[in-house]
Image 1 (cartoon, helix red, strand yellow):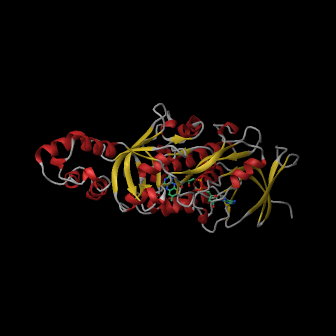
Image 2 (image 1 turned 60 degrees about the vertical axis):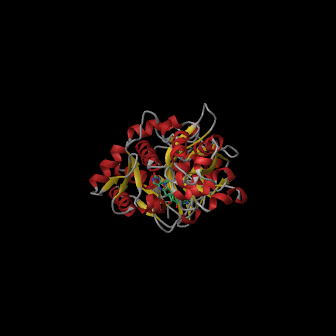
Length: 410
Ligand code: FDA
């Protein structure tokens, strides 16, 4: 039997792979979509607390460096400006999926992330996409002398269901986070097979951890959430976020920490203002002038009570009535709360990370089509590329936009 031949084989039926398959199929191409996991689009299913934060209205396509991290965030400008959040919103509306805006432009499905998956599968069906899942890929061979079609080269993909050949091969296998639902290093290994440069990978949008002994005084705060300003980096390259922080048993999490984790470098300190927008020295001085209450009780009017109690307990000078405290002790308290400096010892790793930073070096790819410059017919889209979005729907928008750019070029 002759080896089945496709215009494009897409590996990875996640956000980018499904969308690319649908759009390529709808252009009339013969497309096969392959995924090794039991279930399609598991990351969409668990995203946004089960409601999928599918894009962000605040994405500024002219300034991608504002919301994307990587060695060259400008790389994503072309794809993002040709398939925008508005385009995806229009698709969601065409499918009658109700959605709402939560916070800072973040759009979520009202009912369930399943609606977004069903929409992508319907779009694939509309494009006549063939879908093999679960189906492992054993290896890939580039056949430079194939006689198929007009092109004289193609890819042979040897799968659990036998070999297939394709004029184009699209790698949409995502990053390394949450291995138990199908994440693998397949895309990076394939990049190496074709001698493409890779940017070092590390977990992003991930909780940060601290040494057990150093963290002991704060572990009692586990579960406490509060708005903070968090920053890292030198003055010139300082990155800051005003978001909620969550204390955990092992360290810090919450949107503020997930966002900063994508910029944090091992060994660097973080600076956290636990009372942003408050003039703490003035507030404490006023309290000293009018109150005889314990410092912790006065502080509880300015920050959450649990934080006030924990903070005051760390210094003998702060465990007395506020009118008896020295100005120096109060100044130190204000400074500690507004400029809490701490150095994480690590992250919770890929088990908890929402994304993988790094990946296929964008210098190896065309920003118009996502095709490898040195390897005709080979494309990388979505998270496997060294483009990582902020928390808030930016990663899915990159998946949709890079997939659309690729599908147009196949
Ligand atoms: P994705 O990971 O979606 O898909 C890759 C596919 O490739 C998977 O189906 C996998 O099984 C398959 N695959 C891997 N190796 C393979 C192999 N060897 N052979 C065959 N198939 C293989 N983003 C956002 O914008 N809004 C949000 O709300 C969230 N929420 C969120 C929550 C959690 C818990 C996580 C972990 C992540 C998010 N994200 C997010 C990030 C978002 O899920 C992610 O960036 C996109 O899913 C990336 O899309 P891709 O298609 O590139 O990879």
